[in-house]
Amino acid sequence: MHISNGIIGGPVSLAYGVVAVGLLVLCLGRARQDLNDRLAPMAGLVAAFIFAVQMLNFPVLPGVSGHLLGGALAAALVGPWVGALCVSVVLIVQALVFADGGISALGLNISNMALLGTAVGYLVLVGLLKLLPRTAAGVGFAVFLASIASVVLASQGFVLQFVLGGEVPLTIGYGQISATMAGVHALIGIGEGLIAAVTVTTVAKVRPDLVYALRGARLDRPATGGVPTKVFVLGGLAVAAVLAGGASYLASGSPDGLDATTLEGCTVDADGAITGGSCIAQRAADHELGGSFLADYGIKGIDNATGLAGLIGVALTFAIGLAIFWTVRRRRAAAAPEQVPVAVSAEK
Image (cartoon, rainbow, N blue to C red; front, side):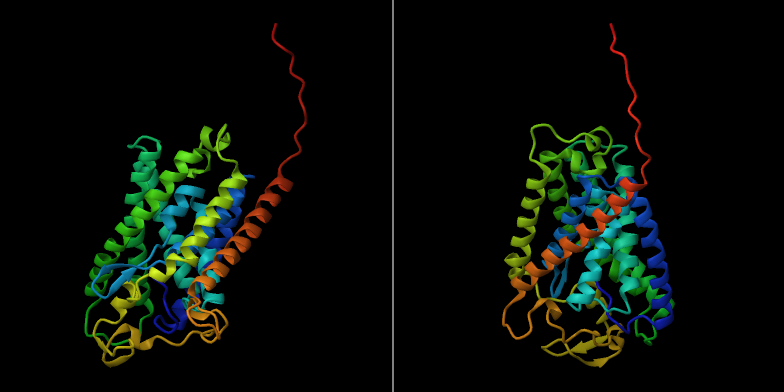
């Protein structure tokens, strides 16, 4: 659901960019309260895993595909503040390195997928876990439903942005755009929900203390006799590498839900180029870095290099995410008041 340059007018894109920066600064401040020695590397892993899974477009309708957004998944594993930062890191790497999602539209994409998607996913998750048991199965079912709500609401974020800043005279109304986006993204949300539920349930069974949704005693105390955090993170990175480096070749090549919706009203040729009609996608502009080394998840000068580009993306996303989260973690430690040992007499 990456918005391209030109679809939303400059003033609205700029306004969303300013709002996104302000909210990300807030997330950084609040993330300091959550990050500890286990959650920081886990957050880096979550960012890398979301990057990998976003490469795996799956079909939802004839000629339409979808991919993971990751807001509810990130919120369940590392919390809303850190989760929003994880998805933002992914979107920034995608825009600046892989030319996926316009740079001028980065604030729009962060607002929809990282901020709105994560917030909705977390709120729904919290509400459901008041009714469901705080077990692996309970949190898995909760994140499934939260993912659907998160994806649908994120799609409506785009509709609002187009109402405010769209400049194409349409042959269809805003209500039809909203209904189409909601219907398609509900199907995408089901696919995302299944991915998120399997992921969170697996982590909850192996290391429940690494699932933020099971916070409290389980988060405060590491699992005894379980997989060490370093081994768990390395194993997770290996899974992400297999997905991005191998499974990405099996991904659907059909337009995703947003791209398919923005093409409504236009005719296209076999290569996907618009040949007539009137639709939102007519205002889409070329990416500023469209000719860069890793543009479109390939490698310039090398054929069929999607897997290698995916491996680079996983490594880069993890490195950037880990650097950010460790920096925030260390600032928290530096800001914490020095603990003075207190002698406690033994009970007789």
